[in-house]
Image (cartoon, rainbow over all chains, first blue to last red; front, side, top):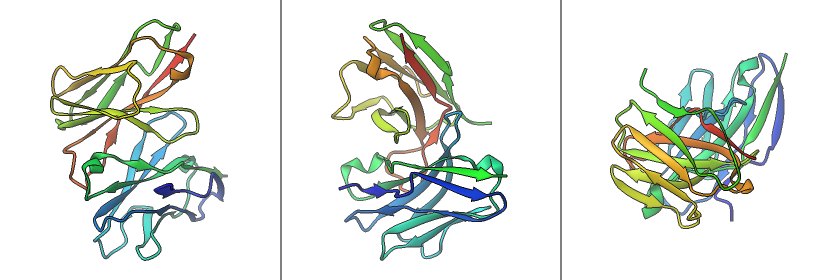
Length: 117
Length: 115
């Protein structure tokens, strides 16, 4: 079974509008971390935001916020006031905290976002 | 600015001809990772160094090797590239292996083409 699921292969959003990118995860660990990365067409992976499993508040970083629903095992990324430069591939990733493999980031398959002018 | 730098950005090599990709970092991080990313796919971890300790992923082909001569530099060697090795190769660093809230910091990647 996939540990990180991103069900939206591609999405469109109008410039200046908000958009939500979905991410669900599967783990039996109580301690884990969730990350979102942005990858423009040029290739670099840019860290956007982090949410820890024990964090009670949803993470926010500027125009990025994470809608963390622990019981539903979802960690959706919300981008407010979309800009043309937000057009990119977005990856959700998880690090499980209670096993030997917890150095690894487990990536979802990504969502390609296109912002329309 | 502290960063992760990969050279070159684009590399073209011939089928079977050894190639080396390089990564350097000014973050003084203990861990350096190498990922392979094929078109429209998620990055796939090949191996990582924790300080001088090399850790290979179980499904990484023997064709891929790595060297870390010092804290700042890490190299990816592909001994006999095949057509299936054409991909983006991403280097990343993190301060430590098991600090759950620490992100991995990525370089810009090297896009490898095989003729």
